[in-house]
Structures are given as structure tokens and as C-alpha cells.
Image: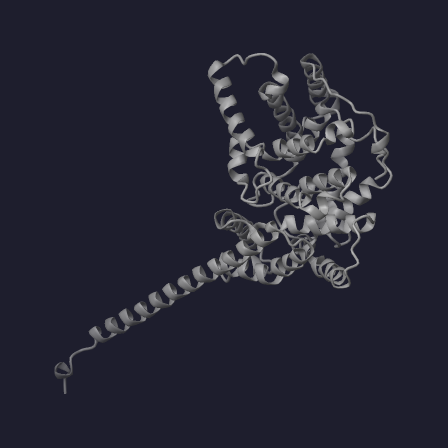
Length: 423
């Protein structure tokens, strides 16, 4: 990335309220300018979100709120969210609760906190107004109607990425540029996800499929969308560009599940040869790719309560795609067919063939308490889904048998007695 961090002098950011309001006013004027044409709903949402931060953030407020009760409630929720952030490195971090405590702003608050805790704001001399604006734009560009691929998922992946970056092998070797790119990639890895998969885009002749020539269609779109927001916000405009965009892209592209075996095979080969050297920039970047891949699919490794909820949400999104395919007389993707599939079957297959092979190798690379915890949850969750499936199948079988027995009795009762038949 060539950020030349060593040449940067320590920079202390002082936030004047008048400056913030001035920036917001300028941004509002830019968005609402009649000469620019119709106002997009996305820009209106961004403006309202940014204004909400101007009025609610205790850091930049500097004055009491006009509504005392609202101020108390805001402080109460801010206090609870702050307490959660103090334990942001815990693997049982409940992102659903944190999202509620932050009024749907988990991605903005979490990512800002991590940037600040790593000292990235001061180190890279990031303008905090631009950073807030950039994070708001990211959050708003995730589609909230998606049951799974939304801003809460992005926040959850970012939190998991932070947990991996805290692991000894990574914490001791990752540079500040690595940390910056790793967190940016996690926060933007599913940006503007449409809620359907790549095969759906291809068979419906979606423009994105044509644009990216049917190759890593979604991941390319997430990457290019992230780069677009970085340019629009000018967050990193004062830093040397060099290969920043390409490195960010290669991290996001690594989350393409269709390329899973390629990364897994390379990872396994490195571990077998024991030739990973994290003082080597290429090797560090590869480990960042693997870490982001793990963070992206780590839901089965969370505690059962959280894991089950994520599983239900992703299956809901799958089944929604299947419903659309059936409605428009398209071939229904087997994974998305609610008539022939179940949450349990989908999760058991996903854990067995996708999650477990990757996390077994990650545990070889980073044999820590966290890895043991994740593998333990994975095993218990897989068993939980199997038991649930077996119980459901047993109940279904019992109900079917009872129906057959009942039908047989009804059939027998309708037959005339032998003695009543006429000769």
C-alpha cells in the first residue's frame, strides 16, 4: 500500500462543532441541489443518517439535547453499547443486540471504534467527518431488506475479523496498512448485495453478470462499489494510492465461495511445507485473505443461539430466491428450494463440506484457545442440527403412519357387513 506510516507525524484531531455542522450543511446543499437533478433515495438516507450522528454523538454534541428525556434515553443506550464495545474481542459478541442498542447502526459504530482502538485515525491522519460519512455510506449501501446479506452481517464479519487480527501470529506481524485494509475489506465485503447468488444473476442475464463476464460477479461488484465510496468520500485521498485498490479487491474476491477449494488447497500446502513467513508481505496478505474467508463463514462456529439465528436468516434468503425462480418459471436452485430442503440439511451440508475443512486448517495455523472454541461450537452446532433433523423426520414418519392407520380404519368402517349383502 505504500502508506509511508513511519514518515507521518502524530496528528491530534480536534473536532469543532461549527466545523462539523458546516460540513454537513455543505453536503446537504450538494445532495439537495436542484441543478443536480432528482434526489436519489439513497442520498436522502445518507444525509438523514449523517445528521442523526451530528445530533446524537456525545463526542461532537457539546450541548444538551432539546429533549431531556431523549437525551437520557440516548445516554442509556449509548452506555450499554459502549459496555459491549469494551468486550468487542469476545467470540460470543451478540451483533443482533449491539445493532438494537445502536439503533441499527452497528456497522458504523463498530468499525469506527475499531479504527480508533487501533490508532488508525491518528496514524493515517483520517478526517473524522469523512470517516463517519464513509461509514454511513457503506451502511446505507447494504440492503436492509435482505434477511442475511445486510449491514448487520457486515458488522458481524468485521467483528470476527478483529478477533482473528488479535490472534498472536497476526497481532505480532500485521502492519498498520494490513489492519486498515483488513477492516475495510470486512466492512465492505458484501456491499450492495442483491440478496441472490451468482447463478441467478447469470441465468436472468443481469447486467452485472455481463459486466464481470460471469466471473466472481458479486465479489467484483462489492469491490468496485467499495472503491467508489472511498473515492466519493475522499477518505484516503491524502495517502499514496499505489496498489491499495488492488489489494482491497483481492481480499474481497477471496470471499467468492466458488473459489474456496483453490484457497484451501494453497493454505493446506503452505501448512504442510511449513513455509509461511509473515514477515513476507505476500504471505501476510494471503493470511488476511484466509482470515476474511473464515470471518465470512464463521456463523456455524458461533455459540448455538447466535449460530441458529444466522442460519435461519441465510436460509430465508435462499428460499426467497427459490420462490422468485419458481414464480418466473426458472429452474429452482436446489439449495433454494423450500419444498425439498430444510434449514437443518442446508446447514449440515455447509458445515461438513465448506466450513469444517477451512477451520481445520485455520486451527493448524493458529492453534489457540479461540480456534479450539470455534471448533467446539462447530461440532456442537452440527450435532444440534442433526438431532433436530432426526427428531423432525421421526415426527413426520410417525404422523404419516398415523394417517395411514386412520385411513385404513375409515376404509374398513365403510364396508358393508358380510351378512347384509343381498344374495
